[in-house]
Length: 135
Image (cartoon, rainbow, N blue to C red; front, side, top):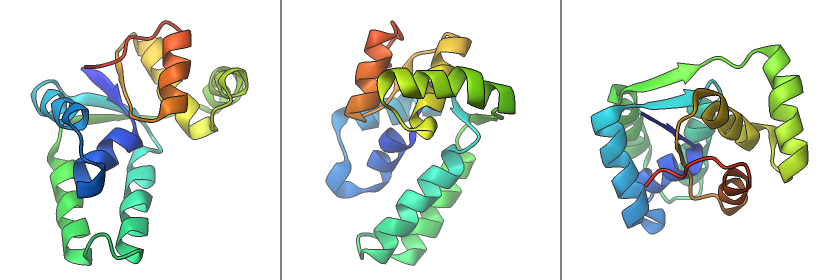
């Protein structure tokens, strides 16, 4: 089981962002499952909507991608208010991350799970925090 962020998820969906790393992570998620913070579905859906509005994806394909993602074994974890303000906010401040990206970092740390991301800032924060990077 691994924690996946929206950047690696969107790389599965957008041809011009595809990579061997993203495909490897998709295989791991298909075989092992993944854990994500509660905002992940909204962040991914928004990324797909933006791609649709910019003409990078057709609406029918966005709908199909949504159905495919919904079929994956992804455990969506709630983020408690206390966690958002004391755990995640502190990590966001320390590493210069958004609260959203820091939530992935916090989830990886608290669950002791590797993190899959292609976001350079989040990757650097994970490495500085001693969090294993999924491969």
